[in-house]
Length: 473
Ligand SMILES: Cc1cc2nc3c(=O)[nH]c(=O)nc-3n(C[C@H](O)[C@H](O)[C@H](O)COP(=O)(O)OP(=O)(O)OC[C@H]3O[C@@H](n4cnc5c(N)ncnc54)[C@H](O)[C@@H]3O)c2cc1C
Image: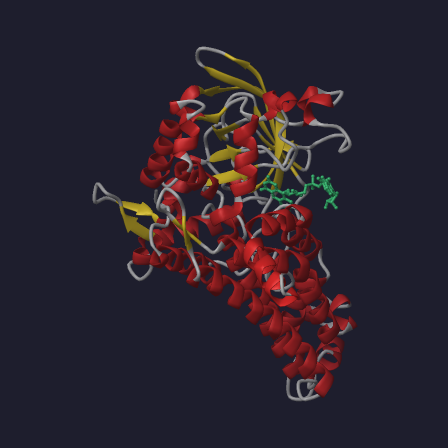
């Protein structure tokens, strides 16, 4: 799919609402157009001769497919996958999170677990394989829907007063399953299909109707996109260097008696497979998450360095110490990412995945510490970054001179300093900063679920043997 084809593909009758209005054309609507441009750049990157080797791979039929959709079979595949994600972050923006490389990876898990799927229904294996093939051939942008609205958290899905609080199978028909409920999804209005999966939970038999996974085109009848309020209303690049690029809109996707043909069903009414999906969900996905966190950490370090240099604080020992702390977080994230790749594991089906215990530690580290890193930048930046005038004030004949005088520092003019100060504000003190911190905390599920994954993948026997040896028993 070319960038132009991607843009026009969004004119598919999808029902999207934002700010109280129905969106006519996603690709040109001000809330979405910058995001569409960012995703279009990624499509263009697949065709850029300098990047194509990294962005694509050769399928068995010798045709190129997007590397997003290649299951790693060697350690080198893992490395290329990380480098591909980094290239997107470098070329498009360090702050872009949802573009399809990690959302497909639970499909890798189903592929890897095909033998297990066969115990339930051989069609599941066929459907997962056919979808991976389709994604590779058509390079569709697939987003992810795991999180349900959930209603009363003290009740199981099947106990909720409204049965749609968790996405469920209403009925199975000859044509497919009919689903109702909703999922939260980042990027849905600008994606083609959503991969729906069960959320974190206790997958007991009574939750059977909720144990469903399927792939749904985002223009399907019965699908409604209820978007959150935008964070970039009419923003200029000078004042909002991050959000003027794009606002990654998060959406409540409503599925109202939506028919999903059988070939798009990964599994239906299978609590055991829901539990499997949850426990192995992050096998490959977390590599993308940690790679994103690394880019964000490096952005925080770079912003801190430039701000401190321009303010003349760079040589103060406490400032150097704070920046070194930021550097420590960034280097630790990089070390965990690279170590998980270097100590990779081979699955029973012969695919290669990052070392799970190291990767699980890495994602907890990122989830727990992004807000700490942001706080360090805030300390380095000082309070002025939340008191900044905008470009219009700088250009105004009556206010401009004051701004030029009082925002200058030494040989650095106000014009030279303000863009970096605005960047620091957007990273630490904007609506977008709050959203990014929430994303960093929750994108890999809440920390308690990540801790459970680390506990399950840690080599506990080896640790216990060591302790027994030292205890002399
Ligand atoms: C910016 C952003 C983008 C997102 N994008 C997506 C997306 O594209 N797709 C998607 O599927 N999801 C997405 N999410 C949702 C994310 O996966 C959820 O926020 C996350 O799984 C937590 O679910 P929740 O928000 O419903 O919190 P809740 O489940 O209500 O949990 C809130 C808190 O309650 C406590 N808690 C709840 N249950 C338990 C329990 N069983 N044991 C112990 N403590 C518990 C924990 O402290 C937890 O942090 C996104 C979230 C954010 C913030």
